[in-house]
Image 1 (cartoon, rainbow, N blue to C red):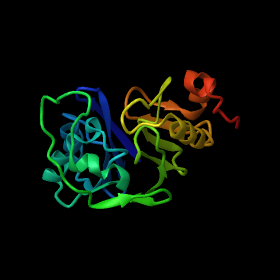
Image 2: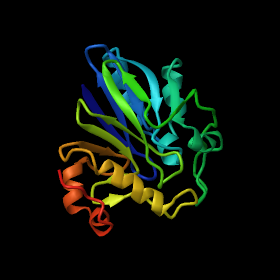
Image 3: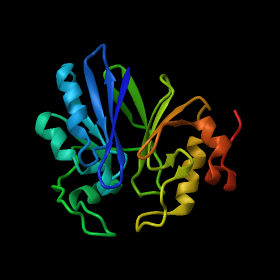
Length: 216
């Protein structure tokens, strides 16, 4: 298994290419503006197929490049939680006018809590983790001890909950849920560097203030 990262766009958002090298299969996780070309180049150079584009949620900075992925891999299916599909159908920012346009589209399929997504032999469990957005999800691999956390949890921070679709009470519940994961779980977030559950349990000021950590 390999994880490639590229960061870009107005909000410095992370995109990931998750690869099963043995089966030459990969998935793009989130598609911020001007990030996917480099990841798609890695895929084409190594003959990886990309059958899926997985979106943690529907905010504009996580899906701006969705058409770039499907232009090069037309069979790639875009998956998102049903509650966040309206943001994909009417993409844009509610806070300011974007200097570029995002083509609208529908999802190819929906993600729901408890679903299993397969990237070759890699199995990702879908965790519905609302609070930053209604349909926010995380992707967790118990076998590989990794969590793609989107904008739920970041190094030293948590996702905004003051947006129109944010809810601090739901965010706290979602954070409490993922803090039950083992300390050594690597966390790949939508913004900022990678971290671990244990590091955030010990040092994240929001986790500490809200008393969400659970010792392991």
